[in-house]
Image (cartoon, rainbow, N blue to C red; front, side, top):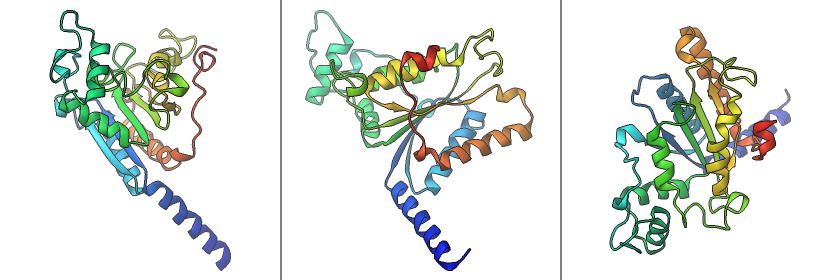
Length: 249
């Protein structure tokens, strides 16, 4: 390589680093055990994204003892209608007047700052763990994340990206289109489309680690290396087309 080519390559690398350095990432993590494979995936993401110059925030839901239940306690002050409690209406009114509980305000601040949200979790009963679903229920309230007709492509979080990274207990074959569990994309529909896309978030292809507890230690290391490699080029990826065709055809 001549000096000119080397200089151009260095300039491109510097420019790429500078572009990533200003980006912020929120990792919402749901696993009870820090030494778990999910914990390793989260650690790799923090390390790799930090190397890129990104600012990384982590909401470790179990460590935080995050409250998953959507209740009246989420509203500070008087209710809009104390005679008949409606969580959606009450949180909408509370958000508008700054009357949500402090834990929700803190999480919403993280979401507002984030360019990318990574959700890291083990698949529970074909879905995310209850504590993470509770985070979705309580944090992504009307007025903050959506407010009809501002949903889907016009959702209130439309300038953000999301990625679901998770592990399964079953093999890849079990989650294939003809597998006993059905196509894994069917399970992603409510998470990626029904929550993220509804709020306007653009969704990157999921990162799925099939049955890591049933493979060798060497294979687990390879899976972590592949995750780190993907993270290095993540910002160059195009979002998936969030439509029924992507999930069901």
